[in-house]
Image 1 (cartoon, rainbow, N blue to C red):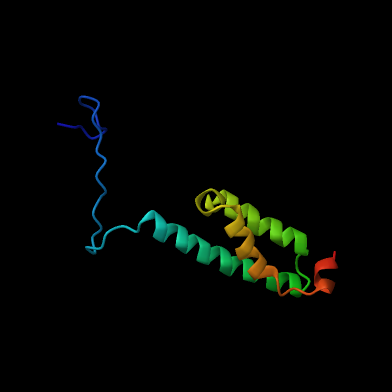
Image 2: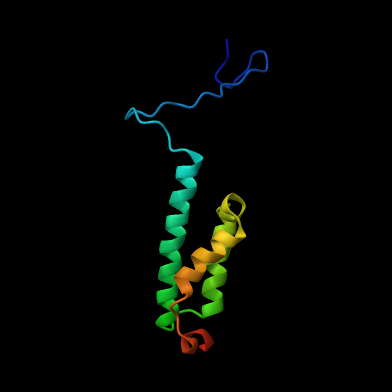
Length: 101
């Protein structure tokens, strides 16, 4: 029998803990999809900040990309997919806003 800390024969519990609402926990695919949606939302918010002169264009893109790296999204879906998502977020910014310091 396992103790509270998993002592006993080197065995550990690996079964997922069932959720109280009866639903199974989200899959890794669901989690990554949710993270991608959140990155798209945050990227659009950063693009709005660029348009309103609150943040520099390149800084905003760097913040969004760094967030994708930190969240493991670049590893999960690949750099090309992240670049496409960020291009969609920041693509509507005009040249004048891109050059603003």
